[in-house]
Length: 152
Length: 152
DNA sequence: GGCTCTAGCCGGGGAATCGCCGGTATATTG
DNA sequence: CAATATACCGGCGATTCCCCGGCTAGAGCC
Image 1 (cartoon, rainbow over the protein chains, first blue to last red):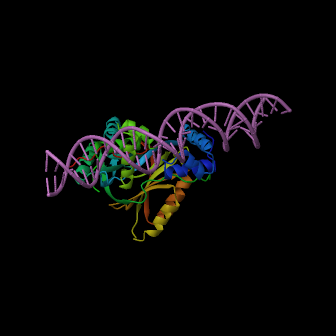
Image 2: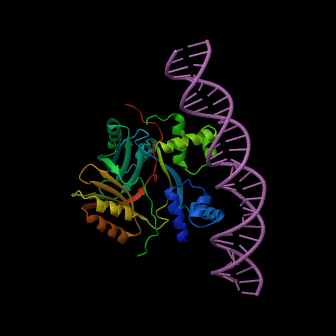
């Protein structure tokens, strides 16, 4: 905290969200900075925890998981360890959001087939009642913020 | 298509999903391959579209978007262009899944504050009725598949 | 078997990059 | 004003990248 990010930092974040594997020199060129200054800023963003990592994005269909679903889980109990264990074990569960509302958890799940999805949902139903919606398409795979937040 | 991925390809995918900015030499060391063979495989995975990109992962709170919400949108019409335009313009909308079920769209939205979230939801409500759930926490920011799908 | 073709891997060498150091200009502080 | 801190640049050796040719194993064919 709590140095806010200046426009150059935002430019770096935008570029690295677009392509995280460009060289630091190339990144410097794009944000009009020398390579060493760029390196310094990126290191700073990493050590401040602003950038938490770099991930390759994979086409789920092409790696054998063509079925994508959103599963909402109504979880009455308060024993969360077994669920967390399942999340760790099952890399088919891509994302797990704990939310307000009746459905305490919203999960994004990838499956190889409908039987596979059924099996996954069955495992989740051990914990509570589930609502499953299949995903037709997703607009962008993922995107992060591109501009500083307006202070209201 | 449709060369399936061998164990070495999967090892590469796992490593690049964990840290997409390691050098190709280091990646080669981790998967027990020479740098040039590793490069060749990575290029192949990219050109096949298995790897669709590399993204820096950003801490939303630290860049000024501490409020995360799941918004489900019931969209009766079939005019999707205005919605798609909103998605492109508003980088606060991180993800948009079109799904089966009553709520045609499930969105993941980041906001700077509750008033900001309200404004975003108002914009979405132009298109249909919305259901909003705030996110307390998310287990892992994101994760992709780590193993080949079992063929059933 | 013997031949060819191909896929996949290795190694090498020049160009580019990385990591680290010192030096400079501006702003802040005592 | 002096001292410190911040952010930047440039330069140097070590590493990595990129592209090439060569090697080996396996498939297909005669």
